[in-house]
Image (cartoon, rainbow, N blue to C red):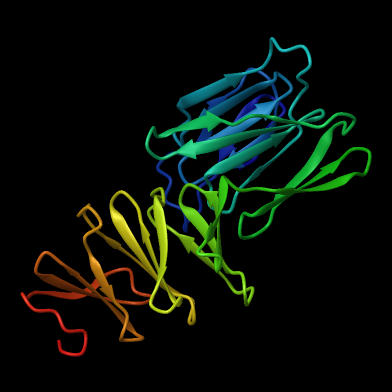
Length: 273
């Protein structure tokens, strides 16, 4: 998706991408130096000190206007987190961060990062797991930032790093092994538990349950209604997780994002199906 000197942004659709609109989708008053394309949005910013968010049809969704701030300079570079839920824009001595809110379905601006004497930021790139952000400046400085919404120590054995609303890095403090837990539907992960002799992961979102085998790095996500956390999980089988709730047994194979099968039963025995 190129930007033009005449102030137009052109969206080119290829056979592997299903976009219904082609050609010039946005007419911008001034030149936009920074362009980002996400799964459902386009971010444009530049020397007018405005950040515009469009959908793929070219319709404006949101605007962040800094044109009246005297200490704000033009935007020179940008980067999107691997999850696509965080956008960072670089300008003079400043990084501006925007986080996607799944509940509000809009972008929220975080507290900007001001670094005195950094001068113009010319390059930004994310680590593949979204936990680090590297910036380069006009004067040759390279800075590495730790990026996470929050970090939690779980039972003094695991470190849970929330790098985005729908992505959590689970690290075994003893062995250093890491697993990236991510919602395929971009739902916000509300709770993470480690069960089954510290081998299996169980995470909740508003509409799904995520299951993971940390030994084999196999993850699953299935649609699940809120039952108040009354489910019982059985991990006796290394290939299948058994979930029992309200007289119903559900089987989920690790690595498959679908329910393997479910039956009604009053008595649950993990060794007898």
